[in-house]
Image 1: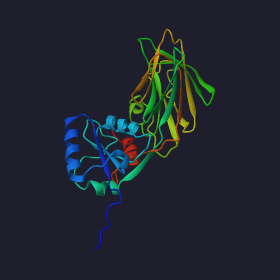
Image 2: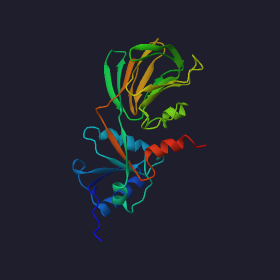
Image 3: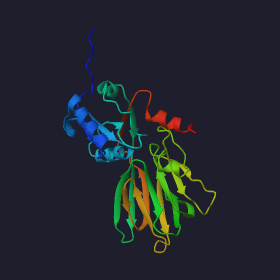
Amino acid sequence: MFKAEPILTRLAFAASDRPEAQDAMQALIQRYGQVPQDQAQVIVALGGDGFMLETLHGNMGAPKPIYGMNRGSVGFLMNEYSPDGLLDRINAAERALIHPLSMVAVDARRRQHRALAINEVSLLRQTRQTAKLRISVDGKVRLNELSCDGALVATPAGSTAYNLSAHGPIIPLDAKVMALTPISAFRPRRWRGALLSHAARVSFEILEADKRPVSAVADNFEVRDVLEVHVAENRDISLVMLFDAGRSLEERVLAEQFSA
């Protein structure tokens, strides 16, 4: 019987600095070959979740599907590592489409800083004193003053990361919402955050910024001493991650809600 060749065959490999990731990359290149990234149909990322985020950020200019295999410490965004049947796994994989968040942060010198976040944009106090934030959604003030260690806006893909550790909600990928979550809220003490439309625009104004400095972080890009931060989903950028059949990102996010 005639067996069709896999549709996706041109692979580019990338690996974190961890020895096990580097060793795996060399073994896979010998077995499956490698093409330059601009000629690849799929990028295979070897490492942990941090390296997956790094690979996604580096791929935003000309997005290609990314298939990750765990050769790091945390692998929520990665598939299990196996050198066998890689092309079959990639061609049978399920796709997860992600839109990053755009952050515009204005610092104390009134300079604008722009960055993209796949997981979350977080605001964090820089000193021992609590931060004081005023939060607006679509131009309307919703919380006049939040005293806290910080706050974050998370994508569905990032809802199981820092957002979950801050007791924010886990969000299905197709829910078309994002999470606005406080970090150790002091006042109002009972405020637990909000679920917002994915089309919402969230603005943070830092109150008493000289006395209570705040930093803004978009994934791994940090701006110190911010005065205001604006966050919105960027629908112009679409990133694709590939997950083994039956182990889609949607399934992992759902399963996380029932984990002990």
